[in-house]
Length: 86
View 1 (cartoon, rainbow, N blue to C red):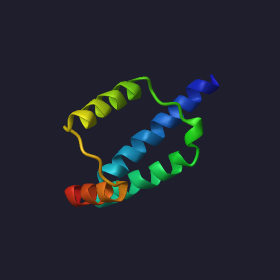
View 2: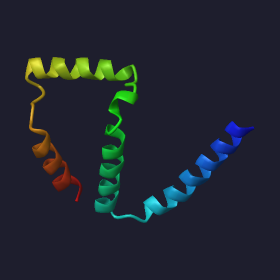
View 3: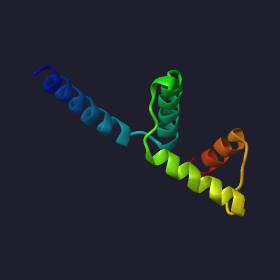
């Protein structure tokens, strides 16, 4: 019973939040995503990577070796993304 109550509570928060999120600007959404990410990585050792991450990483390594992918500094990547989505 407790799990059902929790699930119902979570669903109500998600529905309420979804409506609120839809009213945000792109810039506000990106700031919210950044805040959520910063909160998640505080406890990154407690987060298990899904199995598909390994496959994606292998594919990226292959693209890097073949020259189809380039490495850029994380700060530069964030700036590039900000420009693209603002």
